[in-house]
Length: 155
Image 1 (cartoon, rainbow, N blue to C red):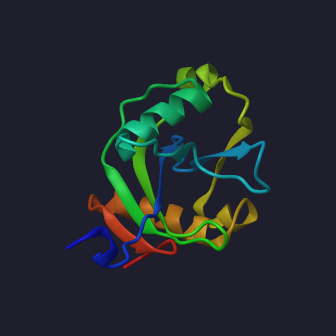
Image 2 (cartoon, rainbow, N blue to C red):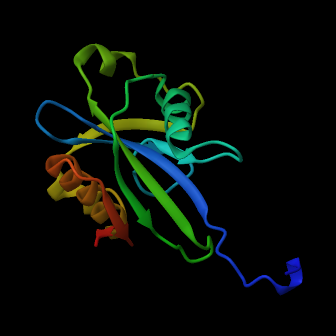
């Protein structure tokens, strides 16, 4: 079979982020300088890089932290208009202590602010599909079983 005979294949963009919690169970959101909404720390996977390695790199670049990451919580099939197919991975960043919070630095200038948010308030900070994705990750963390999601909703 030649390259011209190959059936079309998806070539999704791949991104990875981390879900961090405080001692009250709220999730850490960050405000990117280049978006209109809040998000979780993370970013796109570079060629040849694994989603987990991208998550570690992005958190270090964005927050100046190198925490020990837990398991993958959710992978979300989340195509976006004007961006095409996307696969988004969320890893468990665990709970941040007061010392880690004091160590947060916006070294690369991509982020301007961070805060903890209750799961019930997520829609006030970003799109509904992001809120669904984060809630799917929280549920996966609680159950101890990684989840597959589409458009943020676990299936």
